[in-house]
Image 1 (tube, rainbow, N blue to C red):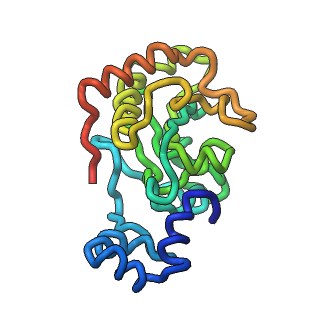
Image 2: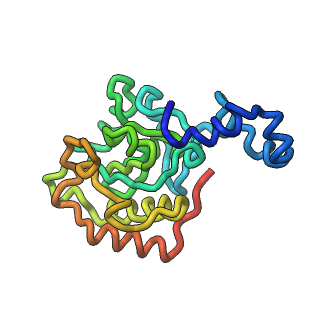
Image 3: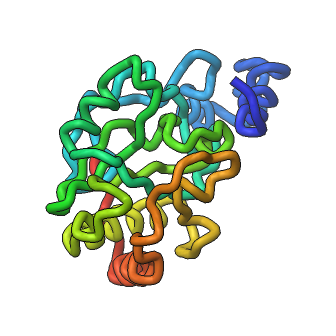
Length: 218
C-alpha cells in the first residue's frame, strides 16, 4: 500500500508507537482510533450498505482492495459508468474473481440500486489506481449507444445515490468532481458516452442534495 493516505498511520504508529500516542492523545482518542493500527480495519457488518435502499451483493475480493476510507484515502470524486451489458450479467461479472474489476454500485434501469463494494474499500472500476482510491464508482445498466437504456427511473435513482455520496464526503456537484469513465486519465473506455445527459444529471444531483440527501444505511 502506498500514497499520501498512509501518512497518518505512519506518523501515529510507525514512529511513536501506540503507547506514546496514548500518552499524547489520551485514552479517549485511542479508543476511537484503535482500528488505525496496522493490520486492523474498521468494524464491518456482513451485508451492510452505505446508501439507504440499496441491496447488497458482494463482489469477489479479487476485484477490490480493503481500505478504511476516507481516513486513509480522501473520497472526492464520483465516476459514472455504463455496464455495456444487462444488470444480472454485470452482477455476475463483479462476483467473478477472473473479471478483475468491480464498482461500488450498479443502478438498474428500473431504479434499483445494488451495492457490491463498501465505500470504505477501493473498487477496481476506473483503470487508474489514484482515481480508484479517491472515488466511488457508479455503474448504470445498459449500452452507451441505446438512448432507451437511460431511463427516467435510472437517472432519478442515480442522482439520489450521487447526492448521498456528495453529502457524506463533501463532494462538489460539478463536472470536475463527478466525471465519466472516459474522462479518467489513461482510460481507454467510452462510457457513459454522448447520450448521457450531464446537464440533466448534475441538475438532478443538485436538487436531491438541496432536498436533503437520504441517510446512510448501516
